[in-house]
Image 1 (cartoon, rainbow, N blue to C red):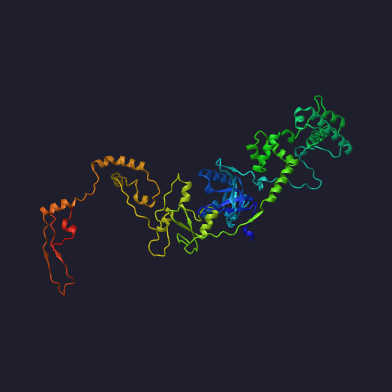
Image 2 (cartoon, rainbow, N blue to C red):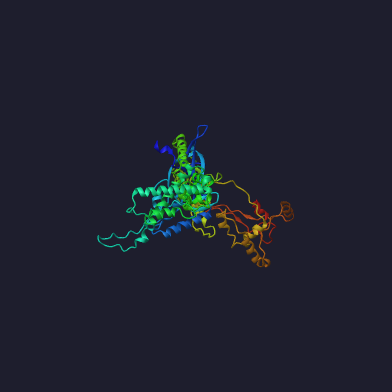
Length: 559
């Protein structure tokens, strides 16, 4: 029961196609539609198969850089199979949201930020476990490092010095370690300090009344007094008092210089109403990702200013109102949803090249190939987006610029599986390869000539074994041009065509066939077997049919 309950924040599998791997999403909201169905607002995660090869190379380069910087290597003692399966566990986070029907949920999974201090084998040992370290932007087709990196490890830890022995002096220069900004043992009493702070607030209120921009933002005296009572005014007053050695007369003189009273503003006063609206909109979209907020919404503000404004904004009534509205919306929304276990109803087609003992088979690949996967391979494909064992196609996808020669010795079944030929298990001892519909290939004279002349370039046997690899026509033309001069003096022999039947009948009327004399012998008991002795045929003149005459072609024996 608990396994089928899905809540906000869960990482789940979604199925959008019967032949494609599951989509991996994180549930953000569960909403009930007007017709009673439940839709889930989810955050999208992408697999390696969903992004381009150039971005995959960039992700591999980033992984190597992280491995070189870290003291512990990531891929220690990993076999080729483990490295192949580890790529299926890597995901790419995105800022993209989408709504999907909750009935398409197919199970739970776990997605975590890649931890450099943890072995990658832990992701392979746990079922339904994935990791991510980069953020993918589907619109811009870019990969960026995640800003939420957890800095754990010896590189981010402080060097703690040894504890001083009792009575041992500290040789470090204290001025470089810290700065003293307030002395609690000052000669002033608490009452005198409070009176000085009241004077500082009054000076701040008067300064706002004189400032034109402040009078527009705080038109009433009450708003000006509230702004003057903020922390920025108190911090300035206490810092001034400390710098003047807690002398009240000199500190008050600094608050009101010759040019007019000192006006202290914080970020809440510096920001305009339009900038505050942009900040709230960006906070709704990106959360507390202040780098993205500054980049996309407030590029003219510094990162320090945005962070300071955020923590001040959380103390305002505006934040309290939005928090109440979100709480009310959350109460009206669904907290969890029950999805029964999905059991696909497929009939056993028994098409597979491995695991013949599987109880269920699933359609996989292009429809015209009619390939099937067993139950275990199908679940692996749906969850991780790849096959358990690496294939030649996966290796050629990223190394197309450096082709490797295939091993000359292969079994018949592995060759069919490599080239994607559909295979079926019929239980017959005959060939298990499914027969295709026969077709007739009409070749031209130039094609026939190229087969004879350009045998070094056009390797027919290798080309027949790999029918989907294109033939380099430019190389064939170049070789034919080089050998054209050699062929001019020694042309190729082309088989002579048979003449029409009317010509043959006319020739036979003029030159009748000579009946050979046959010597018949009576078989005796002593002879092992009876033999027919034929007179030697006349080969003095060849007929128009070639080396054999018409009687030989038609099976006449002179009877």
